[in-house]
Length: 101
Image 1 (cartoon, helix red, strand yellow):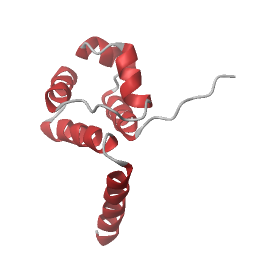
Image 2 (cartoon, one colour):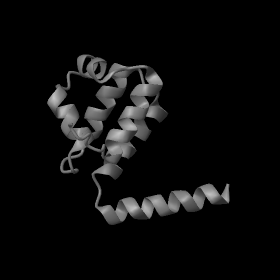
Image 3 (tube, rainbow, N blue to C red):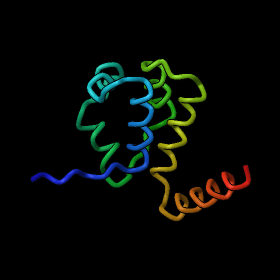
């Protein structure tokens, strides 16, 4: 039996965005020109190189994302490729913010 690899935080955010749009991974690759192995590396591997703002903006344009959706995807990419302590800090701040609402 093959073990499923867990998505990194960017992979989770991208999958949620694609699901909301009804776009498959294959559709994403076709529309954006990203090859399947690159997509897999972005979603599954330990973070090393975050996608650039122009890359994410190009993906957003190809997918028809709003500016808000595109910014959220870029923020998710930056966070996923940030040091673990930064990710933990942001998670704590978000939990605190959600409790305040």
